[in-house]
Length: 299
Image (cartoon, rainbow, N blue to C red; front, side, top):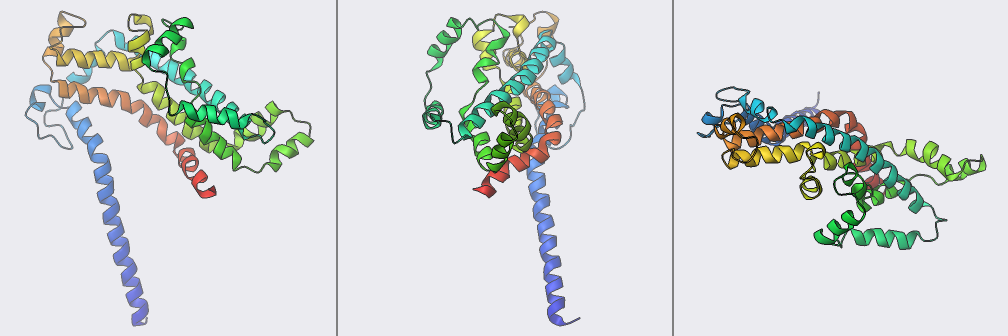
C-alpha cells in the first residue's frame, strides 16, 4: 500500500472516530433533559428537595405517580383527551387536505382570494373575548365539539399540504379525469395515497396540539367535570401541590399532596403527558422525516 493511500485511510478513520464522538455528545445532550426529568419523577419527593439528581433516582419510588393517579378526575380526563386527539386529528386532516387540494387546482378561480384570506388568519386574530362570544353564539360552550371544530382548519397545515400537492405531477390528475374520475375520486384515490408523508407530519402536529391542549377546557368547560381533559386535570394537581393541596379533593388527597414536592409532581406530570406521544412517534417517523424534507428538496 502506498503512503498516499495509507494516509487517506488513516484520515478516514480519524474522521469517523471524531464523527462518532460528536454524534455521541449530541445524543447525550439531547437525551439528558428527558432522562433527568424521568429520574426526578422516580425519586423520593422529600429527597428531591436536596437536588443534585442527574440520570438516575437517588431514592427510587413510585409514590409521585401514585399521587397523581389517585386523583379521581384523571380517568375521565384521559378519556376525553384521547377522544379529542383521535377525532380532532382525523377531521383536521380531512378538512385541511380537502381545502389544500382545492387550492392546488389551477382551475379554481378564487384560489388567490382564499389563500390571501387564510394567510391573514396567521397574522391577525379576533382576540380572546370576541372568540368566546363567537363560541357562545354557536352554542359550542359546554359541549365536546368546542375541542374539535375551532381547530379543524389551520392555515399553516393547509399551506404545507398544498405545497406538497403542487410538487406532484399534475398529469396524474389529468389522466384520472380522462378515465372518468370526478374531483372527489381524484382526491381520495390519487392525491391522498401520494400525500402520506405530509399527512403523517400534519397528523403529528394535530395530535400533539390536541393532546397538550388544556386552556380551551379552562375557558369553555371548566365547570363540566364530564368534559374535562387530562392536561387540565394534571394542571390542577400541580397547582394543588404548589398551594399545599388545599384546593382540590380535600382530606386524604390534599394531605398526601402536601407531603410531596412540587418539582417531583411536575416531573411526573411531564412524563405522563409525554409518553403517549413518544409511543406514537416511532410509527410516524419515516413519513414525518419525508414530509419535512421533500418540500425543501423540490423547492
